[in-house]
Image (cartoon, rainbow, N blue to C red):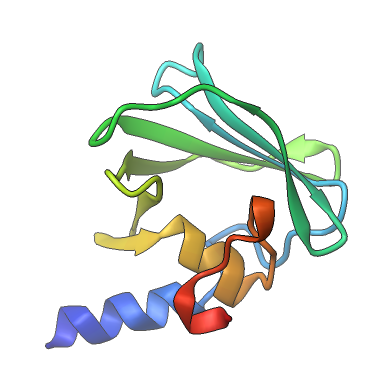
Length: 119
């Protein structure tokens, strides 16, 4: 029960070192060695605009990079899921990237996709 509550609180809190994501920022999902780029989104106002996409297999280890104000923040480790999300490891708990982007940072996912709880 405690870990479920912690995961819920983490899903509503901003990521460490990333209090906000302003327009013009970039989000990249890359391989652990940073050589393969799977997804690139550009933040335009409150919308995530897909710049490029290379399908990443499910259950693949990835890094999520945020370029904010012209500089990259330290990468966040994650695992791809079968449903196209990324489970980030934050303080030992798995947190949904889609949930963080829509609930915490109030961004709209590409193609009008939103989480059911945010509709």
